[in-house]
Amino acid sequence: MKNIILFGPPGAGKGTQGSRLSDKYGLKLLSTGDMLRSEVASESELGLKLKDILASGALVSDDIMIDLIISCISAPDCEEGFILDGFPRTLVQAQALDAMLAATNKEIDHVIVLDVDEKTLIERIATRAAETGGARSDDTKEIAAKRMQVYKDQSSPVIPHYDTKGISIHVNGMDDMDTVTANIEKAL
Ligand code: AMP
Image (cartoon, rainbow, N blue to C red; front, side):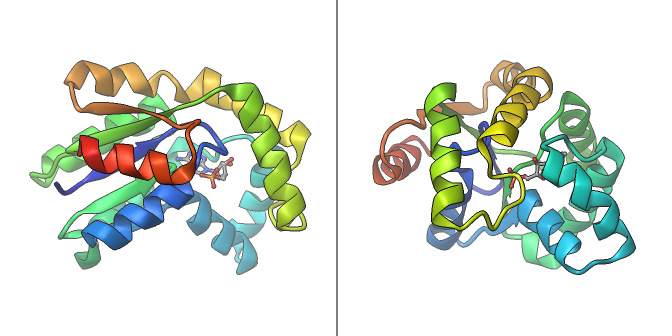
């Protein structure tokens, strides 16, 4: 087991499952959301551009994301395998990832899809906002609903892309976190 994509809508628990899998299997965790948030926090020129996009719940452009992920995956710390949390989020990104991996003789081994109930998820995001004191500018109920719509329109078409390749593993993301972890480990 080497290269894994964790896929699911916002609030599905990708971050939690990603760090657990990364610890257990020694795979490099690449969370695009975390990378973008630290870019924003650095107040770099790019960070300033990204700030409003993230706060609005829209997606960052494919070009920026593809460049970012290509440079991460090519780094030595990804050689033993990696987990992508938050990428790809569009079909264009998925196709660019395919091309990039093929060119370097790598491949995605598993795509873990967290299947969820949207309404419950929006509640979950609102709870996270309350718990974290709104540390994330996109953790409000209104923006959560927007992000869910963006997921449905732009990200969900990525699922059949990997289903067709026969590498996706569907897990019920509505179970409690430990059950989700156990089910992922069983399936891998
Ligand atoms: P996340 O923490 O994964 O929910 O990502 C937070 C925000 O970062 C998203 O709502 C997007 O604005 C942006 N983002 C993260 N990953 C991507 C991606 N692969 N493509 C476009 N935007 C992204």
